[in-house]
Length: 277
Image: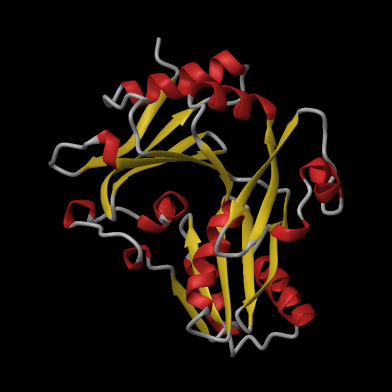
C-alpha cells in the first residue's frame, strides 16, 4: 500500500538528460517539493505528500518510492541539493569558522537536542558558512539514499538570492512564509545583517515582528526593497505589508532560470527554494 500521494507534477515535453540536470528536493513539514533544472532551463517540478518522520529506512523508502512513481531514479544527476527548512541557523565568517565548534555556534541562538543533526554549507557569495540543524532521522535516511547530495538551509538560499538583489539597492529583505512561520533575511547597505525564523498567529503579529526588526536595525520601512515568497499570502497579509512597508513585491525566479509556458498556472513562489540557482 502506497504511503504517499502526488500533489502536483509538471514536466516539459522533452527528454530529460539526467547527467546534465540538477535535482533539488525541499523537505517540508509533510513531504517534499522538487525541481529538475538542466543548465538554466526548468524541466520539471512537483510536490509529494509523504511521511518523513519515521526511522532511517522509512525515510529512505518514502523518498525513493515517491520519485520512482514518476520514473525518477536517483542516479547520474549532475547535482543533488537537499533544502532543509531549519529553524536554527547561524552564519559564521568563513575565515573564522572552526568545524569543532558547530554546536557552540548554534547554542548561541537556540537549544540543541540530542535528536538533531548539525550540518554546515559554505556560501561562496556571502563568504560565510551556514550552520544549521535538522531532525537526525531525515538527515541520516536522505544521506544514505543520496550520499553525494549537498544540504542547505532555506536561510542560505534566501541570503544568496537577496545578495544579488542588494547589489542594486541600498536595503533589501526577503520574507519566506510557511504555514504559521516566516523566515526573514535582511541586507543593510549591501551588508548581510539578519537571518532568523519567527512564528506568528495573525497578520498583525507578522507585521509587528518585521517592523520590530527594522527598528532594531535602524532601517526605514520606506527605504527597503521587501520581497515575499513561499506559501500563499492572504489578501489581509498583503494589504498590511503594503500598508506599513512601501516597496513590497514577489520574488522573480525568472531572473535566474528559464521557465517555459508549460508551467503557466503554477504558483512558482511555492517552489522558490527549489528554483533558485
